[in-house]
Amino acid sequence: MLELSRRTAFGAEHDQFREAVRKLFDRELYPNLDRWEAEGIVDRAFWLRCGEAGLLCPQVPEEYGGLGLDYGFIAVVNEELNYAGSSAGLNLHTDIACDYILDYGDEALKRAWLPKMVTGEAIAAIAMTEPGAGSDLKGIRTSARRDGDHYVVNGQKTYITNGQNADFVIVVAKTDPDAGAKGISLIIVEADRPGFTKGRNLDKIGQHSADTSELFFADVRVPVGNCIGEEGKGFVYLMQQLPQERLTVAIAAQANAQRAYDETVRFVKERQAFGKSVFDFQNTRFVLADIKTKLQLGWAHVDWCLTRHIAGELDQYEASAAKLWHTETQWQIIDACLQLHGGAGYMNEYPIARLFRDARVTRIYGGTSEIMKELISRSI
Image (cartoon, rainbow, N blue to C red; front, side, top):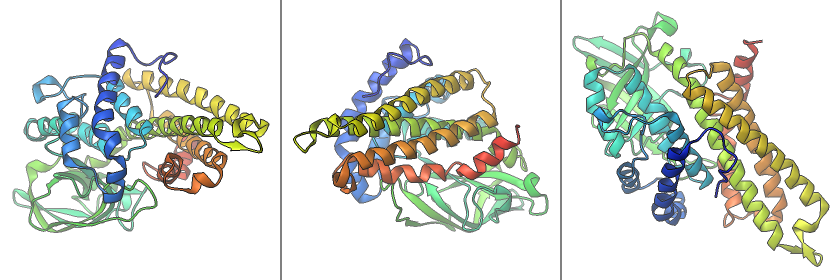
């Protein structure tokens, strides 16, 4: 269980909300983790339970069915979900996809989708990455050609979180292929549109219970009203939202690293070697002391970032630095924790194995560590 006594970013209301999150996860998440990992997808019933408990999109105003809460409540769900070792796509749905509609969508789009996102009746995905374009969004080839009062969408996306469960997808597409970044728009494509096909649920190294998919668009016709915000402003919207996405990844990495440490402390105190516990060896204690120091610094930094973001002050360079440091540190911590498990750490029956597998991608998605360094260097 995450230690909260020294946290500075949360108040009493956040703590009460966290207790509700923990009770729901104890009842609905933990008993099903292994099954979801084996099946490669999280039950839709779990999404509905989360919606009933107010865990999905709590930032949505009451007029659209939400609770009108600040980002701190989103962070609470993020921390608890990732401390649990779950790769369910709640963060993508709540922290990332929702705010594109909330911040830039017109009234019709807000009323069509936000209430259902809050209840879990409509699961969202956002499709940026393509087989030939990852961090460089200007290189996307998916197009949305205007044809009267419709767009005709053609292209392919890959590595899309919630790809199998999604009821609608926010597609990053070029509405003007000759305008570069100024020709990119965000188009909602409903899952039941003719010509839209969900490909296979991708076989990944880790995060097995996250349904990650290829998506195909073949002359998919959608109304022009499905464009989020202004046509051609998609790249601007993406850049404005990326700091929150990267903070979300940083928080998840920190919670994951804390879980790895807690599991390892428990293991080494129980495991015997040469007539004493593994914890009694100086090397073990020194490794854990180093990890505990990194975790202390990490939580202080998370709270600093949270406070700045809730106040609207966290900039893209600070968010990129948070994403870089927390994901790289997560990897160092979990690797060291697995080593302290010895051969047991290589066995899937131990939580550390799943944490290790799941951690690797965090240095890639949301912008690779190398891209984060490139962005941070621009502020120097």
